[in-house]
Amino acid sequence: MEETEKPIEVLAMEALGKGYDITGDFRLKYAKGTRLLVLDETNKRDIVFPGAASFTMKEVSQDIRLDKGDRIRFKSDVLEFNQMSELLNQKSSIQGKVPSGYLNSIFDLSGNWLHDAADTKTLAFDGYFISLYYLHLTASPLVLSDRVKKSVPPHWDPAALSR
Image (cartoon, rainbow, N blue to C red; front, side, top):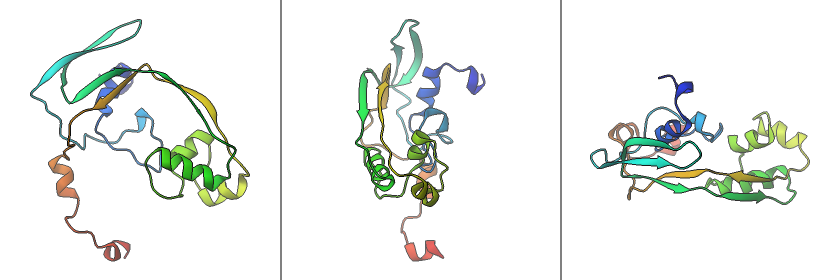
């Protein structure tokens, strides 16, 4: 089945545990590659997604939970570019003031943050985020896959990385 033919529930389930490039967008369609985390694939159950056309997904790891969604209003003050970048980074648990792709996506910016900052006086947002349900991982602690463990060096040498 092609990606475009899969129900959104399947795409959301498959995105759990994958990574995102923070210079890009955080939306579901931008999830990268394969899962970075190990899930318990021996203990499984069926999950029924709520809605007018209920959808049941069979054989789902018990490390994945489905909760009812809600409606949340998000709004900000009118902020300068750097302040808005810092606010969105904080809300995304990202340190620093350098804009993420999330800022670029929300405000349709170019991604060249020096030019965007110079061309933008102030930014603000006010809107509703309506979620039908929340899918999330409940495994604790989260365990990285062996592939990821082998890819990350055991010791970091920032000076060597900058060369």
